[in-house]
Length: 261
Length: 242
Image 1 (cartoon, each protein chain N blue to C red):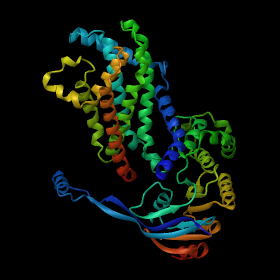
Image 2: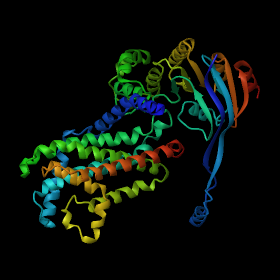
Image 3: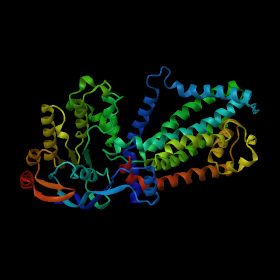
Image 4: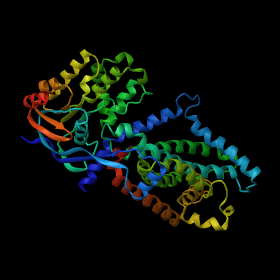
């Protein structure tokens, strides 16, 4: 109990650092670009234009309101892939700092996840704004968008801690992960409707947390439905499971980071 | 009087890559046999000492004798392979000035960033911002990106931030060799000020004279082992005659 209070106090002490890191990353991302933060809004829209043209004209995918279908799925998937691939590098990048001064190490992957959260919220604004133009008026349930985003955030922090710790010891992960997320994207119904997935690959959906997160997000933002308890439980279990496993792996290995980075 | 720092039987092992392996075959062979091509190197062996509150404690030794490793362990940056360290109160490590400075940001932004790296709150930094700027004498360059700063200028800002707080324990590693002569004097004055205010100081320096002048007690490290521990004057004399 006492230890928990100390942990919370330490976290509070370093919360300003966390804020500063996010601010710095944000500044660096848009430095010297004319449109600046507008890119967070424009990028998903331009991507949607390209992808929906390609997929509806070339691959002839017939889904109602395909651009919105794609945008909502991509938003959640990119949140995950962006946050985790940034987290992956975070400990190695922090090597200069952690060798010189004591900072709680979880700050680094956590910061990358929060940074990606900020960009995701900007992109969400873009999606909500163009949805009526694409023929889908967002209903009131869209206000619940923070719920699935929160599930994904917790999931990201867990997976991010695992990846950042493992990457300290095996840098191979760095090269492998880009390929893995690409495969993961193709196995998740982001670009195509669920029934387009061949029967033989369906089993993967059952164990694919991204499928449930995206499903949840689309239901509240696009279809105006309230997700049932079952979906909430599944999403919650995935998030907490990854978070706890990530925390354990990170805690067990963090004292050795400094010898390997 | 109680101790500010207690170091109990510290050992620190590093992995050191040793020989070069001639061929891929050899590499794979050793990999398969799990005969890692690393060799353990003992940076510190059974180091014990205590520092009383308010003491100024020096560590001398040649390059590679484990001085910096010891400081990093005391500051909590590294965990020892075995043994334990107990410290009481807040620690300000002046091990490398300006840890976490970002060259793309201005000095103003870096003061806030570096301050938060050291665990200060926003209010605290805002409250002491002027003192920091005053001490570093960098007011005219505040809004210039740090990449245009010279090494000495960076060190000034770093020193000013690190010593603005009144820590219980101050850990100093060779940093008094930065900046110009006048600024070095200023740094020494600030450290003397902190010392008279009851701060415990742990200092590593190549300059034996500096240790003799500043410290009450000293430790002499050789090959990661304690060669001598005691009165600063005696330890420094023995070290010089070595």
